[in-house]
Image 1: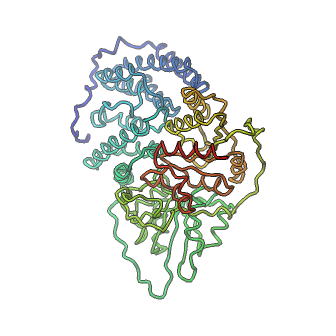
Image 2 (image 1 turned 30 degrees about the vertical axis):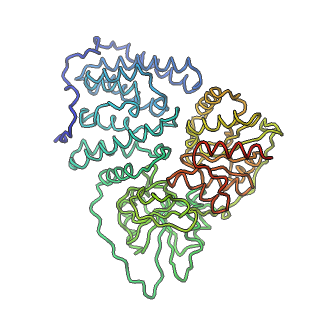
Amino acid sequence: MPPASLSSPPLPSTSPESSDHQKGPVSREEGPAIFARLRVALALYLEQPGSPDSWTELITARAAASAVIARVPRREIQSALANAGRQLVRELAAAGVYDRAAPAGDRGEAQALVSGGWPGLLAAMLLVPAWQWPNGPRIESVPAWLWPDYVAYLFATPQGFCASGQAEVYAAHYLRRLEELARLAAINRGSTQVRAAVLAYVQAANCIPLYFAEGSLRRHYEARGRLLKAAFAVPAQEEMPPLPRDGRRLRVGFVSRHFSPQTETYCTLPTFEQLDPERFEVLLFVHHGSGTPVENFARGRVSAFHVLPAEFEAQLEVLRAAQLDVVVFGTNVTAVVNEVTRLALYRVAPLQIANNSSCTTTGLPEIDLYISGSLTESAEAPTHFTERLGLLRGPTHAFNYEADQQPPTATWTRAALGLPEDATVFVSAANYFKVIPEMQEAWARLLAAVPGSRLLVHPFNPNWSSEYPIKRFRAGFDRVLTAHGVATDRLVVSTTRFPSRTDVKELLRVGDIYLDSFPFGGVNSLVDPLEIGIPVITWEGTTFRSRMGSALLRSLGLAEFVATDAGSYHAICTGLAGNA
């Protein structure tokens, strides 16, 4: 049975009558030729993202392809043209085209196209990104056979934001659509169509872009938690009462995807490596063994190390058979849906904890406690979490980078990087995703205010992604610099893929002042400049992700380098730049 409608009116039925946007049948040659033109334009744009001509050609070709799709007869649901249209939407989303602001004319055309039934909707999906189309149809008003494609389109992940304010717009869109899908799933639990839509969300969803909105994300993650329970058909979980402690050690399990060299590993190691073996029995559970030096170090600090079986039900059996008192999920479960995220939906221990590898509240009903720090959280922090908030004194983060430390493979000089010896050099290794347009604007103003200064950034580290749109990043940043009257050669972008963090530190040594990002600040990346003695400027907000760096500085007695707004950030940076 089709799911019950919630409220909004449906699209016109799939009757064969032509809409106003259908101007007769598409010839056998016309559609493929126009779609090929769009793909050529897309390739040119990806090669030359800073060229106005390549963007103009892309949106022109996209409009032509949209017009073709709008003319597909409504009865031809599985036609070659319909399937090609669905594929083109996926390709444009994956290429990051939907990150750019859609032309106003295209947004108006998209709204008009919807009157043409599903071909009009599919044509509109090609024209505008969902998060820039607030009046797009509700899910239940779309034909059910199109739900998986429509949900994937609604939650398509930006490669990066291109204009100030987009992060907030995207987060508002995401919440509205997430709650809409969660309600739909709640009232239609047995619907095959709803299940297909929810699974499409699980496959498409990546919550990383939400991190760059300033406010609390609790409602987002509560709705996500409900959806994930529906997606995996998680039954009601039985409570696991604590076992008596007399005469035995506390059994603590840590669950991670792996213990390979990655930021999550270096943050999790300090939480168990020095636990008293007379009082604690520590067990590690991983999905993937690596045999790396850091994994071998971890093995030597615990009672047992288990590689979980491939089958999910067998994973649950292993964890429950371990009779843990506490389980700590050491992999980030708030970005994409990974193996650890799925396990965290189930009860495997009386006390279940998320550590600081997860960048926000998890929203998962079976997570009882989120561990943070008194300096990392604001007074309003308890309202940001679905879990109880456990605060350690000071910062929440600790690191062990010694377990597999490698010597640097090279050294860097200013001359090698084209940096003047007498220039003030600002430097940042904040990840590409964190360098949102607002941050670029702040750094461009800083360069304009400090004559002759330079900015060296190293944003493409492998901890966040294996691939980045480097050309697009440079082209976008150049536009911002030009708008502020700053020569683009004052920005130096490092694209080197370093073998270890010690090489990153060698690069940072050429700088004078390290710049943290906002509203998602650094913490692992701040350890590098602090270790080599470069002053670090942070920008503190009200959420966990905007207070991690400032917590480190406050714990070191360096509160004078903590800004609380754009004005104080600029003032601290310019003041320090002028103080040799």
